[in-house]
Structure formats: structure tokens, C-alpha cells
Length: 495
Image 1: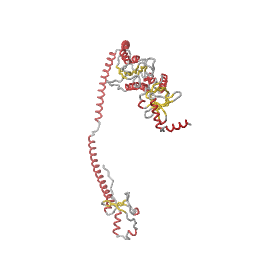
Image 2: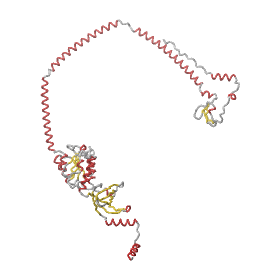
Image 3: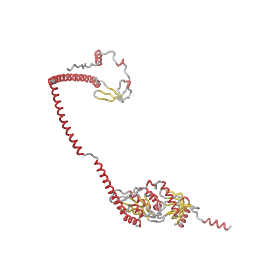
Image 4: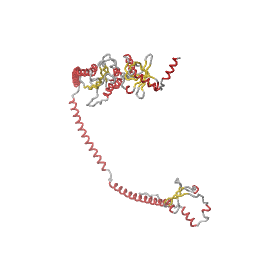
């Protein structure tokens, strides 16, 4: 009985908290107790929001833990999160009161072990191979003797010194170094940018010439050390390079994904320099040997052709004798032709003189014809003038008649021309309606009017029963149209 009484008194003393208050208190306790933690687990349900934040779940055999990586941190992660990979994340635990859940806010992420890296590497290799980035058809042939070689590597390591030393021993070439990080978070981005940057160089720029060959090199290291050359950005940049590319990453036993995308893989950076250029002394010796062989071959061919030509010339006839005979024959034919032409011309001249003696004198006939043409010409000119004068008179008569029939002349005699709103001629009062607007045209202009009445006038009331005979005669005279003057179109002979 005493225990129950004490419990009741204790419950009465407890404060009442809101949901937000208890959630805030719990959030503060969790963040203070787990301000810095390292958690190992497999990523699942990964997604990247439109805001740039990343959300995922870390799980093992018995439990799951929500994880979030804010946008500002996501760009600095050394590992690109993917479903199925095992990672170790570093961050702090916090709560999400809106869903009563706890989660880890991720600040760093790294692969959990070499096995996970190898699995991720194999999955990525299959994915890129499926896109055709490793196909042999994409491989380019290396230039035999490049003028400019671009090298993508660290400027402070032993790799660049080995490459320069080997190039100097074999065949000195102009080298452009694009310094990059070859390990760490920013290494992949810098290497991809360097490959793309070399490809953007102008081919004929004298200050910064475009490389004929690119060497991407790095010394040996662990799988984690070489991981930058397994990133998709680097592999895609190597596959898309227009300039032939040699990958020389790690030692002979090391293999990275850039080796599959490159046009040629070198086991070491020194071997890449040996692939890039031939040995200068060996090349000079080979050129000298080939030159000597070429000179010998040309001399042998010339000698053989000269001997063959000499043998052929022995079977040819004596050309000067043939030409002399032909010249003599040509002179003979020329003389005979000249004599024949003279005789033929003399014969034709004689025949022409005989024919011309029997011809009549054409001069009197020409003079008579000229007089006849002049006479006929004068007659034609006179007939033409009469014809056009007759046509002109007829045209003037018709024009006067047309003018007298014009409706403007009718309007001058006091008549009017009535048109409706559509500019159509009104012929009867039956076509008009009261209130209709009409246009009345007189001899000196037009005026608008409104119809007030459209009662037709009967023939009996509007027309007098008898008209003066003179008016009737005048009306008859007006209706009778004058006949146009008769025009004689006939024309006599001109001759």
C-alpha cells in the first residue's frame, strides 16, 4: 500500500513534455554521445535528390541505419556511392524528429576493403565494356615519330624524369607536361580534364602545339592508390580522345580500367616512352641502309634499261636515210602539184572567157527594172495614203457617234442616274424601299438621297392621253440612231 502511494506521488511530480520537446532532448543526447563515429556497412537504396543531397541505407546481417550526405560534402567524397558496395563512413549520429528515426550524417566515405574494391572494379569494367569503350575497333594506331608528346602525370614524381630521360636517349622530342594529382579525391577529375584539355589544343598553334601522342603515367601502388585511374570520368576521357593515348599506370602486374580504354598499354612509364619513339641511331642506320639499297636498285634498273634500249635500237632502220628519201619524194610531189594547178587554172580562165562572150548585156534590163520598181513604189505610196485617210475618217465618225450616245450627254440634258448602296443601277421604283439610301448622279456631280415613298405611277395617270405631235416626232427622232457613214474598203490594183 505504501509503494503504490509513493508511485502515485512520483508520477504527480513528473513534468509533461510536448512531442517536440522530447524529440529535441533526444536529438541533443544522441548528437552529444555520438558526435564522431565510423560505421561499416553495405550501401542499399541509394538515391540522389534534385537538391544534390544523397540518401542511402547502411546495412549488415542484423540491422540497418539510414544515412544522409549533404550536397556540400557529396562532391568531396573519395568514393562514388553505389548500391551493393561495402564502405566505411565517418560522421555523426543525429535524429530526424519528423519520422522518429535516427541516422548518420556522412562526412567521409571509403571502401571497406580490397574485396569490395575488386567487386566494384569488376562491375564497372563490365558496364563500360558493354558500352563498347574497350572495343578493338576504337583503338587508334600510334604515330611512328610524333613531333610533340603530351604527358599527364605528377610534376614532382620520378615518372616524368624517367620518361624524359628515356626519350632523350632514344629520340629527343618536344614534351608538354600537364601536371595532375595521381592519387586522392581530386586525382580522377584532374586526369580526365588533362586528357580532354590536350584534345582541345589547336593543331597549328606555334606557341602551344597540339600533341601527336598522349602518355598517361603513374608509378606503382596499391589498389586504393591507383583507384583514380579506375574512375568512369578517366576511362571515358581516354576512350573519347582523338589523339592516340598510351596508358602507363603502375607496374607490369597492375591493371586499371584506363588500360582497356587506351590505344596502347605500357607495363611501365619507361616502356611507354620506348613505345612512343624509335631509337634515333637505329633509325638513322636503317635509313642509311635503306638509302644504299635504294641507290643500288636504281643503278641496277638504269643499267638494265640502258642495255635493253641499246639492244632494241640495233633493230631499227636508218632513220636519216628514210627521212632523206621522204623529203625528196615530197619535193617531187610539190613540183608536180604546182604545175598541175597552173594548167588547171589557165584552162578554167579560157572557158570562162568563152562563156562570158555569149552572155547578154544585163545593164539595160537592170535599168528598165529599176524604173518599173520606182513607178510601182509611187503607186503603192499613194494607195497607202488614201487607205489610211479613209480609215481615219471612219474612226472619227465612229468616235463622234460614240460620244453622242454617252450617258454623260444624257445627264447634260437634265436626266439623272440612280444607284443603290451596292452601286447597282436602279431601273424601277419597285426596286426601292422607304428609307433606303440612294446615290443620284447628275451632269456636274453626285448627291446622296433617301427614299421617302416608292408608290409606282400608273401609265394612265403619268402619261398624258395625247401628246403634241411635235413631241412625238422628237421622241421618234431621238430613238432613231443615225447610220454610220458607209466606208468603201475596196482598193484597186496598185500596178
